[in-house]
Length: 449
Image 1 (cartoon, rainbow, N blue to C red):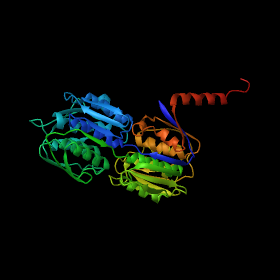
Image 2: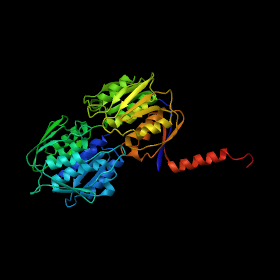
Image 3: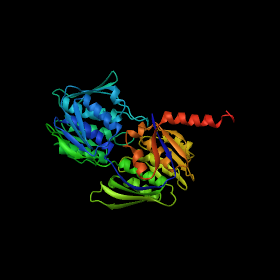
Image 4: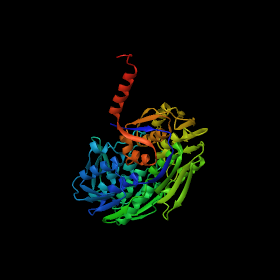
């Protein structure tokens, strides 16, 4: 099993190009199930989650091929509608196949999905939305089974997608995709406003869907008889961009980010500027594809952060900013409103000398002068990114275990950070452990042995 070995204390400098957004790619990939014509997506990152989605779609009759960063998907068979547990369990976004399957094929069977250990994320809102479109939904042997009404076509309806922690992004994507082929008009109320939803709506529109209001809390969809193929470039990954910004905040330095979606990061850049990190636009006509400079030379100041649905502060950047704020000169307060249990990284940061106190969905951070390298364990995708951010700033050696989590959402992040001057390498965790044990054994051997 791989791990990252990081020797911290090096300021970052250079340039990094932000890749295509994983959280946009996955629902756009499932949209290929809505047509029998090829759909090509560009700037698709090389990630474990992308590969898993390709496996799932292949089982559902959708073939895929890569040419560099271009991924072409083509549904060539429509007789398979069962998304099996052994694939679905690896990735929460696999539930995004549910809506397209029942909309196009009249029936879908999907195992209850898995994903990161960041707290309960029920799928009831997805199912409620499909029922509002006329689907009959049951649970059979651990599978969600959804069937279109008699006649095989969903019906337009009014769908409210509110939940206890705000709108659901995957739920909005699911119902949006399903409604494109439904008979009549669908109105989604309390829809997620994330840029990934806007990107999905843009692809579906390119395919012939009739959608208004994507990016706002109310989306209106007028169903069509069929959709065609399309060719679209993904939006840049705002979470990747924010992670590199947090790395500069923690380790210091001066980094230029290219292809940066600044327009989708206003909540994060607002907090960074409050923390004493400069984020300066350098150019670009598209606010979602800017070049910007991120610089931190002086001390890091504390901040208050509350995660919220977009355009609020993203929950997927919480761990990275907690890591950076552990080095701020003063007390910070971070409150998690999306996934209240998403604090598994706090215990690992404490092993590095961070001073943190958690009370329910809030963590109070008393900044320390330095973090100290230690062996630490990643628990989920974004927590692992937060631990890497901490390791870049820590004194001495940090070994981050279970980096398969980070491979789900970042393409060879260790290589990108090394190009910015970080001392980071991917290692075999078992070989590193054996090496440490050998060194320890030699250090305790009696003289003359």
